[in-house]
Image (cartoon, rainbow, N blue to C red):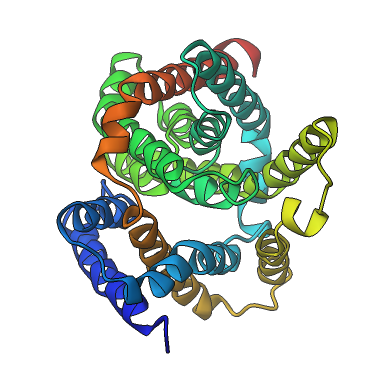
Length: 324
C-alpha cells in the first residue's frame, strides 16, 4: 500500500511517454520517460509518501523489464544472418568499450558513466544501460546522462546513415549490416533501414537482434570484472550482488523462447510488458535526477559518446570492406 501512490505516478507518466512514442517513434518511450520524470522532479516538490513507489519503479521494475525482454529474444530467429554478422558485432562491441574507457579517462568521467556509455553504444542502447547499471552500482544521474547521450546519436543516425549509405553506393546487404552494428537503439535501426529499402530493413533488424543478444555474455563479463576489482580493493565479493538474479532470469527467459516453450503469439505481449515496465522504471529514475546534474557534467559525456559512436561506425565499415 505504501508504494501505491508512487507507482500510480510513474504509471501515469509512462502512459504519456508511450503515447509520445507513437507520435515520435525515433525518440522512443524510454527517452520521453526519463525526461518527463526529470521535468516533474524539477518543478514539483514530490511528497515523501510517493518516494517508496518511485524507488520501487526505478529499481525493481527495471529488473522486471529486462526479464520480460528476454522472452522476445530467440537465438534461433537470428542464427543464419546473425552468424555472418558475428565478427563485425564482436569487433564493434570491443572498440566501443575501449573507446569509451579511453576517452572517458581523458575527460575524467566517473567509472560507471564511462562503462554505461560504452555498454549502450556497443550493444542496444537503453536496455543495455538498464541491465548494466545495477551490476556496477551506477547512480541515477549516471544512468540518465548515459541514456540521454545515446539518444542524441540515435536521432542523428536515422538521418545521417541513409544519406551516407547512398553516397558510398552501399547495397541493401551492406547498409543493413552497417546500420545493425553501428546504430544502437532498435527503433532507430528500424527507421534508418526502412528509409533505405525493405531488404536493408530486414537485414538491419536481424543484425541488431544478434547484437542485442550479446547483452547476456557482456553482463557476465562485466560481473566478473566488477568482482575482480572489488577483490583487488579488499572488498568482500557477494556473488548474489555481483551477478544480479534478474540477469539469470533474463537468460532463462531467452532460453525458454529459443527452445520453443514460450508461444510465439505471446512474444508481442512480452515486448509490450517490457516497454511499459521500462518506461515506468525510467520515469522513477528521472524523478530522482535534476537538470543541475546535467549542467555540472557539461559536454564531456556527449563528446565521449560521439567518439565512441564514430569509432563503432568506422570500424564496422572497415570490417565490411577490408576484412570480411
